[in-house]
Amino acid sequence: MTALLDKASPSMQGLALLDPEVADRASLVRKANFLSLEEIDAIKTAAAKLRARQGFQTEELHSTEYRDPIFMQADGFFLRELPDVHGKICRLVSEVDGDNWMMLASSG
Image 1 (spheres, rainbow, N blue to C red):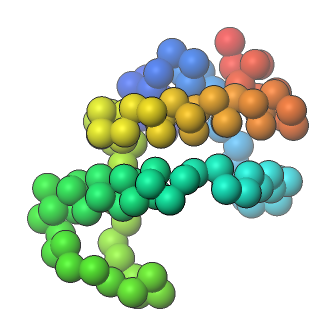
Image 2: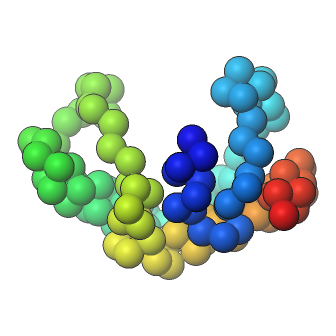
C-alpha cells in the first residue's frame, strides 16, 4: 500500500488509511446527484477505453453481471481522461472529510 501512496498526489501522501474492517463500520456519507448524467457517461466511456486497452472485451454487460475490476486511478488514467470530474471528486472528498473525520488534515 505504501508504494501506491508514494505515487499519489502530495495531499494523499502519508495518509494513514483505515483498516478495511474499520472502514466497513465507518459512517457513510451520500451525496445525491453529485455527478451529472453527462459526467457518468464520460466515466463509462473512459472505463470502456481502459478496459479495451487492458485487453478486456468491451461489449456492454448488464449491470448485474460480473466484470473483472479495473482501477481507473492507476497511472493517472482518471486524472488524464477526466480532469474536471477528478477535481470535483477530490474537492468532495476533502469537504466530506473536513465535515466528518478530519483524516486528511491530520495526514500532514
